[in-house]
Structures are given as C-alpha cells and as structure tokens.
Length: 233
Ligand code: C5P
Image (cartoon, rainbow, N blue to C red; front, side, top):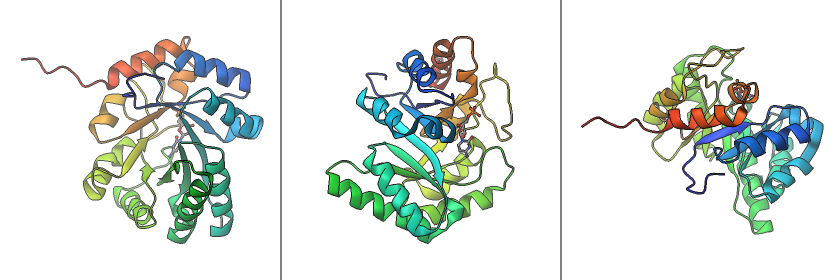
C-alpha cells in the first residue's frame, strides 16, 4: 500500500489460490490502493482470505456483484460489512428496492459493530458487454437514489456519469488496458490515463497485471501512466 494514499489502482486478485493471491498482493502492494477479491478467489478461499488481507492492513473491494431479492441481498450486504471490507458491489439492474436494502443492512451492521460502513458500488453494465450511455446513466441515477456510493462503469461512460451525478459520486472503472496489454474479452476498454481523465476515482486492473511476467513492474507502469502528465511551461 502506498503510504501517501494517492494510489487509485485497484488490483484484481483474479487467481485461484490463497498462495497466489498473497504472492500477487505482496508484489503489487506498494502500488495498490485496494485488492479486489472476486467470485473465483472468494469461492475457492472464502472469507478467511479476506480477513487475512484486512489484517495485513490492505484495502479490500469484495466484488461479488450481489443480485437477488432484496432480503437476500440485505443479508449478503450484512455479511460483507461484518467482514470489514472497504467496498462491495451490487447489480444496479436488481432495482432500487434491492439496492436500498443493501445500503440499510450495511449501515445498520456497521453501527452495530462500531466500524465504518463499507462503500457500496453498483454495477451498471458489465464492461464485456456493449451498452449505451443512456442505459448506464439511468442505472447510475437509480443507484444514487437508493443511497449507493458510486458505480462501476467503463471509462467510456465515466465522463457522462461524472457530469450527470456530480463530484461526490464514486466511479470505479474496470476494462483498463494500457497500450502494451492485450484486450482479452473486454470490449469497452481504455488506458489508465483516459479512465482517470474521464473522471474515474479508481481503476480496476486484472490481467494486464496478473498475466504479466512481472506483476510488480506492470502495476508500477500503470501507476506511472495514471500520474497527471507534467504540463510543459
Ligand atoms: O482482467 P481484467 O483487467 O479485464 O479484469 C477486470 C476485473 O474487473 C475482473 O475481475 C472483472 O470481474 C471486473 N469487472 C469488470 N466489469 C465490471 C465489473 C467488474 O470487468 N463491470
């Protein structure tokens, strides 16, 4: 973790085992603001790994994309909050009532435990799918009405979301591909600089780091690319 706290790079720990996750975390930790734990790693290694990352002082984004009836999502949100994660997410397409249930359950659980409530993000449209800006904006507005803290959206829509929803609404952007990395299955890709210029608060990067020969150097290069360019005088 960067001591200055300025990193906006979330590293997706998209690996199959605890050992590989901790190794990746060790290699990229000085560049990452948070580690993202998604469906694969969480299904394989469970909440213990999340606790281990938290106990080591890391920021964690639990990316399980909850999408179910409001009561079930509220219970999942309560459990995520109890784990002490910094961020978790729900699908905006699950509806306003479902998102509100997550927000309420999470804030109640956080006050019960006397811990800060995690920030809740809503998935607009997956970056592997095509979508229109209007679709993303409609979902983002629904998320804000429900009391969610921000959205996950591609860099392509980030600018419109920022303009429509203001400075305080968080935007987390996956589908990041530095010019030197492969596109894989992502469609709406952007470079780190473009994502930040379009208003992203954080970028999420998986394969350009996890598949690199040196994940640590890849993370460092991405961090450098995100730094605002010096304006020549
Ligand atoms: O490997 P890559 O950089 O494409 O990884 C992107 C990460 O962001 C994956 O963990 C994926 O699940 C996640 N993600 C995404 N699109 C969303 C939300 C999350 O690609 N809308």
